[in-house]
Length: 147
Image (tube, rainbow, N blue to C red; front, side):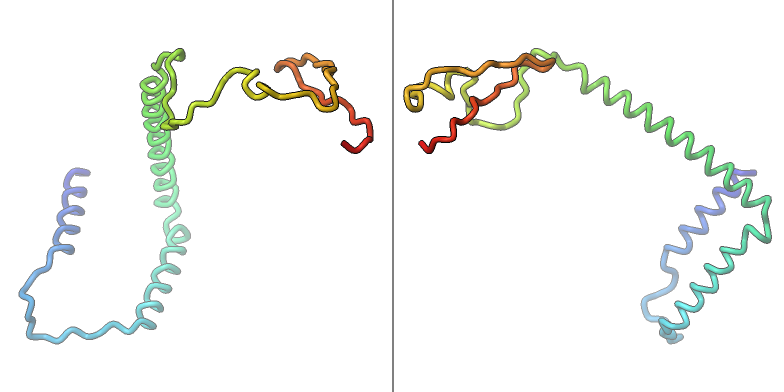
């Protein structure tokens, strides 16, 4: 029975979309007034809004159907997400990630201070505090003199 209803729906939809007749029709087509079209659409929306008041059982059944469809869609999306996650996550973590950048930056800590001379002959270093993340550099306090 449901198959017949579904088939009738799709056939009706196809027949509505297929143009029937020739390009030159003998009867003139009346132009649609935009104001009357808006009023008709507004009346249709108010009628649809009162549908649940007239047929509460149909609205309850429709709500249950939408809940079931939403649940299946959510489960399907979860399955697809997990599948894609396993396909993408199967890469070796030791592989170098290629991001498209061609600039090579030096990785040595000494590269940023290579050839740097101490200011005013000061060669003292400040105490580096250890934290959970790693050493936190602390600058030397300023003496207040202009350099």
